[in-house]
Each structure stands twice: as C-alpha cells, then as structure tokens.
Image (cartoon, rainbow, N blue to C red; front, top):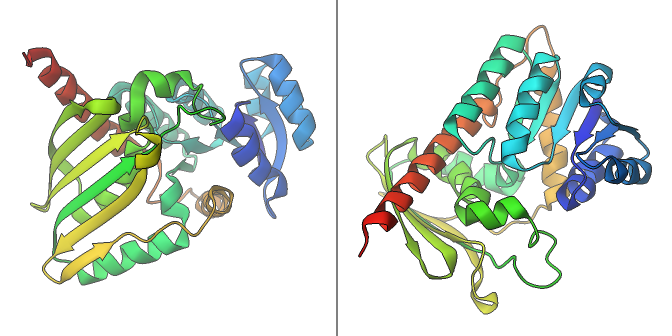
Length: 299
C-alpha cells in the first residue's frame, strides 16, 4: 500500500515517517507539509517525493498518515477520505465533536478504512491486559494519573503550540481513555476541575455504572512525573502494565491493522477507527466544557 505522509514535525518524521519507510508491506512515497521547504527536507530524508499540492498527493497514494495538530488533521482527513484514501490518524481525532462528526461521515460515505493511533492500543502487553480484564469482568472503578513534563529544555514536544493551548486533557487524555473505555464502558456523565500546574482532574460515570477518575497534565514538576492506571473490581485490583513496546513498534502494528482493515471487498471496522476516535473527542469536549464552566463560577 502506497502511503503519503502529511506533516513535517518531530512526530511526523521520526515516528510516522521512519516507521512507514521501513515497514515490510507499506511504502512511503509522498510527503506534504504546510511548509514546502520542510516537506522537501523530510521527503529527502525518507526517500519519498515532496508534494506542494495535497490534492495531487491524494490522487497518487492509497492511504495517508497524518501527523498534524488535530484541528488541521480533521479537515485534511475529510478531504483525503473523499479522495478515496485510507486513513492513519493521530489522537485526538479533532478538537470539536462537529469536526469529528465530519470525519466519520466522510469515512463512512467513501467506504475507506480508518484507524486512530492511540499508542497504547497497539502495544501487545496492553491489549493482553485488556483482553484479560474483559474476561474477568466485575470492574466498578478506575483511576489514572498521567503527569508528564514536556516543557523542559530539549523536549521535542515542548514547542508544540496546540499542546500549550489545549493542555494535557487533549494530548494525553486520549491515551488514558483508550484504555479506560474498553474496561468500564462508554462515559455517560463527566465533570472536571483545574488544579495546580495545569492539571485537569476528571470524574466520570460509565454506562456500566462504574466510576472513574483521571488526573492529567503536561506540566508536572520534573521530579513528579508518573503514568499509571489501576482498575478495582469484584475480583481484585488490576494495574495496567508498564510499556514494553516502543512507539515505533506500536505504529508498525497499527499499520498492519490498517492494511488488514483495508483488505477485502469492503473495509472492516477496527476497534480504534474514527468512530472510537469520535467517542473520545465527545468525552474530552464534555470534560473541557465542565472544567471551563466550573472555573468561571468559582470565586
């Protein structure tokens, strides 16, 4: 399958581009970016052709991998789907429910395969954990803490404008939800409050009756970073295992799954397709609205 890469930043070049360029059954042939000079540089590094016209790129490839800010990604994903391209997207799918709806509608209408790269969902150790958790059942509570510290010298994500503007809820919140939802079910009620160091603290009720809480920030004290998720149930406590798979290995598995979904007379739905991506956006938007409204009325 011939892929085009949309994006020229660190994540685009060093993860998406590097993985596609070495994948056994995918071929990276095209690169487009909002800065043509950067696109030419990245394309040269990866052995691909740089495109100035993104519509021309869509016409020359079978699929696109998008590594751009979510508000930019959503519009390009709609255009790519309408051009008949399969989609490998980043999380979050979009920054509004309306934009996510447009992506889902375009994908469904075009009949293309789609996948949103929630990194943990393509790590075999996490998928094994989720399968076992669903086999055991009886979970009534979940807790997650994701405290990152990206605004330190040398961090490649520290200069990301959308991450600074939207914060950890939108950047790493999707990672937490991608593991939380398969165990406790969809979220039907949510509230959130802000805390120090740009922390967002979320409490949710799930369709199963379970409840969960998440604490998320990109601006933790450098000596206070932590990533952990724990579930509590009738049969005991389950801790999500530490990551043993790199992001590049996880993305390679994601490409495999997109290829599998695109094979056959009609694309197959992947558990992490744009429909799931829209569910995550819906929850993030509700939590964001709750924290903003609560902040507005706090003395």
